[in-house]
Length: 387
Image (spheres, rainbow, N blue to C red):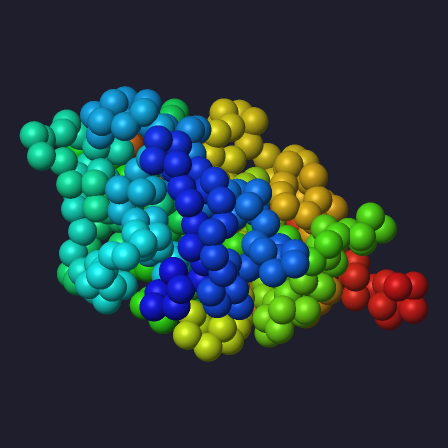
């Protein structure tokens, strides 16, 4: 089902949750983006890749211990315990002949259990565990959980050892968006519990929209061998009718460059679509930028001019930043004294000391100056006609 719209009748394996067979088609226009249809039948492999992609990955920190407490052998089994419901879209699995309706069970309009989220964060299980949770359909390798805070659906996410830096990186990213004059980004705050930082953000999807990742946007058309992954993605967006993606990519790539982001992959980049009309709203806001600012590097290895490995279009930052078509919009004056934000937001803890914070501040400043030099060199080339 896509909210109230039946898409297809499927046969699933109770043990593995795998889709075994497409029994009957209904409204295939409402199927997930990127699932190929041949001779009127959705591709079963594509369906399974989409379906299992909704689950908690095996790489999630602490997942083995959590599954043991939850009483399931594989994280995929959790999908069926919540009908596949998510807080990122409106797809769900309705049992055949069931009277269940989306309006009665969706997580956007109804409370959900905290049991799964608490266990995923290392908590102990009670006797009667309620598995009806959107945490069952959350991807990523860092610990995370959905929680209702002040009636808002919020995602709480942990950091990684040894520095536990990712949550504070997200908050600094919010400050950087503000300085850049960004208009399409997720706002993050930090939550401290027992001296450990966690990032918190409100859900940017509501009961009438869905997040479609770049993974599925890319799969909506076949990539030609001579076309770069960047141009293929832009072409796929154009073909689907997603407005404003190239301009958005200019902004996001500059933001990621300044953040020294090493994990902007096709799963945390995408677009938003109306689930009722299938109209594309535009690019999804910039989110999930915590794996940045040398989060896993020793302090002595942090340097703004160091070549950084990147995703998803190029293997390093110096090549990927060249995809930006226009630097003229960057408000360099607003980026002055950016190191003050680092010194304000990053506080000494048992995970980070003052030396590391000061090193990060200097590195971010150096990153800004490097980008300013690139823009100056580009202007010089345009002035000389050597473009």
